[in-house]
Length: 505
Image 1 (cartoon, rainbow, N blue to C red):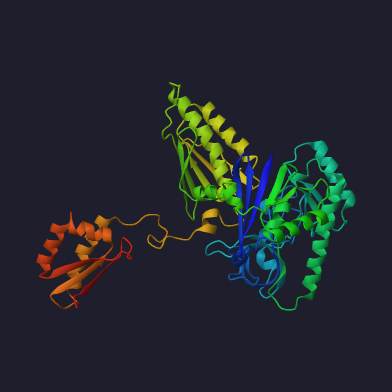
Image 2: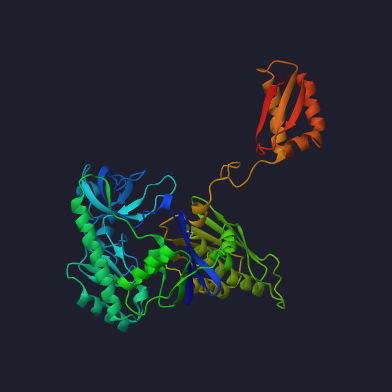
């Protein structure tokens, strides 16, 4: 699909927005203080081997040790999936694995061993980075697999004739001791494009090998992925990209240099934005970012989605809202229209917010199996534009769709937000009435260790307003029972659940 890419470079933050059909579909954010580690190659040391989990912890110099599954260790490379568009770490279920004869972690690794690994997934929450020893280096059209001596073609390239053409070109040009995966964006590209990518990737691999030999202290980083504005050229720009607009002179120069050094013609058009007005403001992208942090998403028909993200999963609920079916007098038809619109918007929101892991969609119940199939097919079709690896199940008897989406980095909320200090991430706080009744229970307890005739109660203004109004009689009864008067004071800086009981000076 035709797209435009906008690159905003700030003092310590770079943001990239991909727009299709006048709608932002992807956002990528990188901060200098929180530079991502996915794709980085490290020389590490095994610190623990866990036979019970068939995994090992490897110190690679990050805050937490990396986590290496036995399936991600390159003891045998015959089962590497050479049809995965991004390469790296994905392992097909080989016959030996299914029969239980795959290598055991305790047989291939021991504590103290030096090992070269690559980060496959960012550290998330309390979890360390997911790592693999199946190194892969992504280029614009190819993925280099240095420990594999074969050529694979992305399964998304469906034409047998095109698959054979691309495989033959790569096989002719590649060093015979290196393997490659042909990425989906290679469909229809020239031999010159392939040649440029092979030269770029083999040069990077040579630099990694040289750096690896020079390192004397372990752990150490051997290779770091390029900054976001350069990865944009490699990972996001395609032959359908109309233009790439960047608002920083230095980044513009680096991108032009990258294009002329590593990309064959026709090269993507890069435009230097020089207007005094902010790029993301003039393109209305700032507003779309703010909306992407919301819970409710309105559909054009009047229906809406409710998106709730948690550590375990993301739940997306579909509602008809203001949509009454228009001219249709058939309830089933109204529901079908809402669900069809909803699944397309859900895919858009998943991409925009970079939601990964387990995702549950709660659609409006449909009676007809044919309609459920239509909605399922509509979502499958919408997902074709998503580069992430997705597994989608059919609609269940309860009207739910279960899906998983490969997660390699934090989602948009995790990147831009932090837990609310008032609710501590719960998403809600106790009502003023609940806080009042909690105060009524705590006041008598306070008399046991506070002397003096008068007590002072400090609380949020909303709570104080309730104590002076609807709950005035309740407070009087507590005062009478204690035999003490209570002076109440509003403290605007307190959150709704906070209160403090002291004695009067």
